[in-house]
Every structure is written in C-alpha cells, then in structure tokens.
Image (cartoon, rainbow, N blue to C red):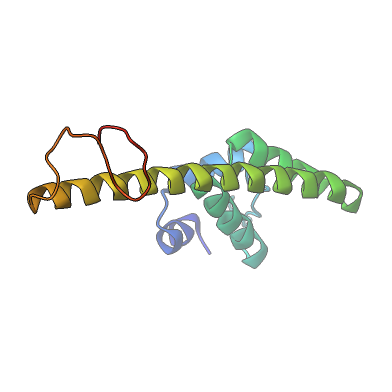
Length: 136
C-alpha cells in the first residue's frame, strides 16, 4: 500500500505517518526501487498499534522505546511487558478519574433536574442519598 492509501484507510494524515516513521514510533517502512513507501501487512500492524496507543495517551517516547525494544529481540520481552503493564496502570488510573468525574456530573445533573422539578432549590445544602452535604 502507498502512504496515501494507508492515510485514507486509517484516517490519519500522510505527515503523521511520516512522523511516526521518522521518530521511530513505527519501524522503517520498506520502499520500492523508486523510493516510494510500500506498506506491507506487518507495517500496517505497527501503524494500527501506534494509532491505538497514541489514542490511549501513550507518550511518543514510550512508543519509541517499545519499538526499540522489539527490534532488540526476545531478550527484551520482560522490559516490554513492564512497559505495557505500566501503561495499563496509567490508563486504569485515568479511567478511575473519569468515572469519578462522571459520578460527580451525574450528581449535579440530578440536582438540576430536581431543581427544575422544584424539589430542591439551587444553592441549598445537598440532602441526597449520598449525604455528601456540600452545595451542588
């Protein structure tokens, strides 16, 4: 596949693909005799991984380190495992924070809905089931 085809397939820019390769977020892509990038299935797997990991917030430097470790072979499997476990822990903490924020938003939304229904006046102390006793 050409870089344009890969760009269209994954809905990312050609510049982003070039950047991923240039900084080492994906391994170097094979080129045709005329120097045009020729993405193979293995290259596409790396592109998919890079997109997924970036979408999850993995720092560029971490992705570069992961690719470097992969190129060093099976001796780096424990290091790769640790890198992935560390990233999973970061994502789990982010999810915990998001869940906490959603719960707070749900609470505030409930207060506004109740306020609209004249059950609770805005600015009064909360007397909901959670007994949080704060102004909502």
